[in-house]
Length: 330
Image (cartoon, rainbow, N blue to C red; front, side, top):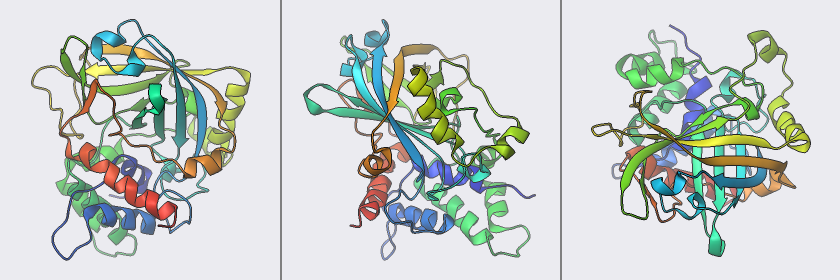
């Protein structure tokens, strides 16, 4: 069985990092970044080790009437919040064509600007599942991909890995069609967070970021003929003509649902609450330069939102920091 593993494996690292490794080894955090760099033919100076190609936009977020009943977070109350949003392709290849199979899933990072100069972030991908429950398992998958590139073994290392890791197999075989636009691409938060309102009531939930224009995808023929930068160009043209909007939703966990394992999906029957509307109005001036100086952090939270104990979520910022330091030449 031959599978285009890089289609999904490389992008998964947009939402992953690591835990401390055994003595006399590099931390898993650093090993992940090393392997991603190798898989993308890097290092590519000044770029992220994954999701290197992207574009940043700015706009605002308007909370819904029910958002405050879910959380007391500042941006979920009555006032609009300015936002920065970065859309991206998978892999650490800075010039990967947008419709290339290895450029999926897509990524979205959202920074909400809060009062007093504070901010909080969301980082999500365009697939509603994840291939590993722990950083160590994810490193095992990436290393299996790397070791399969010049291997003549049958089955290959990655086929052996997928044969014993059903969550990884599900992730890499999930269809990832090319969207018509970033404005027609849904995104999903695979990690759960705890939301607490002003009355002290708490729920666990996962984000869904759904385009108001609806999910729309290219045919295979159209994707094959797409310009290398069609997504990056299209989103800029769209916001010049009209604002692009997304609904920020929250899928609420029921009692007994697994909130600490990114490979476990909750049933579609779970309650969905609309938190608000994200409106994108323009491309950030000098986007390419400015995005290199930013590190989006899913654990950059604000009062009213807390991390779950998902090991994937808790580890992510460390990996981001390794990549960020290398991007700045430190």
